[in-house]
Image (cartoon, rainbow, N blue to C red; front, top):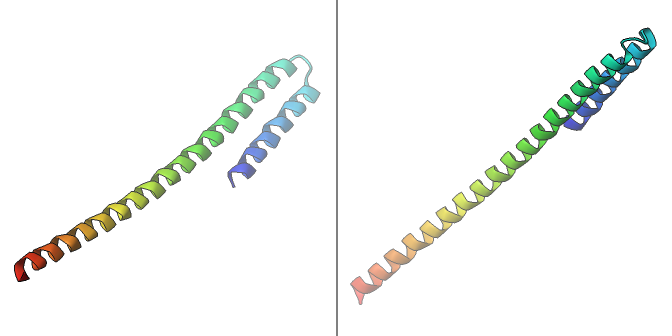
Length: 91
């Protein structure tokens, strides 16, 4: 979806760049730089949005993983604690 959006914005602004050049020769350079700037703006916006989403998902995955690891560790600690407690109590 994000890759499609990048391609769409690229084609959209690239098309208007050529359209402006065909329309008037005097404003060709202005339109070229104008839409070229916006093309890169949108491209990097979606690029960083993609990587932000990727690292957020990565962080969430490891947070989930360490949470369950901590829960697992706590559970076994609790288990051995009572095991030694009863062992000490009965013997």
